[in-house]
Image 1 (cartoon, helix red, strand yellow):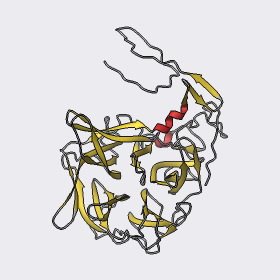
Image 2 (cartoon, one colour):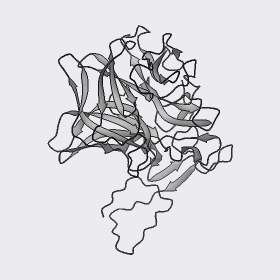
Image 3 (spheres, one colour):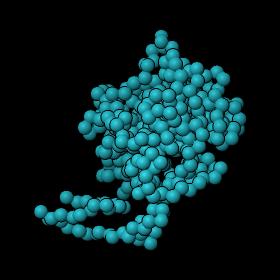
Image 4 (tube, one colour):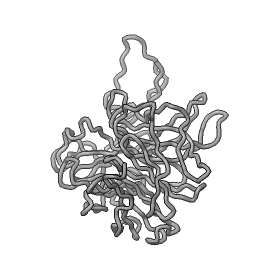
Length: 386
């Protein structure tokens, strides 16, 4: 697999004469795109699957699109990876590497877990034996069904699977209306529900989507240890009531029966971004030295009104996550991945064959009535004290 590095020219309009083509954010070549799915690092490539409809510019016949990159800047879009079938369209999910063949589908196979939609939302699986290039649907899908009498809500989607070393079990998180279900398995095929996470103190948050769970070391003065982060997107609860990505810090607790539950640190939740264009954010799996996240750079308030012609939807820049302690208050901190530095060479911003000189502004003081013109500025670091 080789990535064809495309020239990035901000001022070049695409073939449909659209002036909004992406410079360094990923977008599909055509059609609709929303949630990132199945993020995984394999053999030097960062794979990103995503909610995709190649034909329409609206959320409709969803499949898993597929793109790969080595540096988070130059992307190659590949063939659609997982297409709709008799169980409905393909909603969001995740991928993992089955290194020890727990599933019996093949050592080092890549397993994709996703939500099928017929007759109700339920969880299905596909597997790849060629490092994610092609996928085969599991013959006995769904692996977690949703019968009308099962006491599972209609909104039951977006599985995220991680390995829990202490219990030697796989954990699957599933968004279930305004809760997150924790299911566990030892063979990745047969699953048992063990826990429900419910934010009883913040009920007016709409529907949860795209859960993620990862462990990070705590950074800060006189701090040590790790914390688990439960990441959720919700279609309410943002600063102005709109969609947002929120998170909770806490610990995974194991009871006498070996059941796993997420115990949050306090009754509050925090919002990852105060802007409106970061939704369905999830992290890459199989990345050993850092935790990297990407999100859908859009908002359901206006996602269908974007003024593009051939495509609709863009991803955020990938970011590296860490937990910082601020006087004992733990916060999730984001910074762009180091690969973005390739755009800055010798004090110049390089884009295709165009070079823009960078003028640094440091230690500037503005007083009442003062103005500073930052039109057409490319801001690398902004630290503002008011």
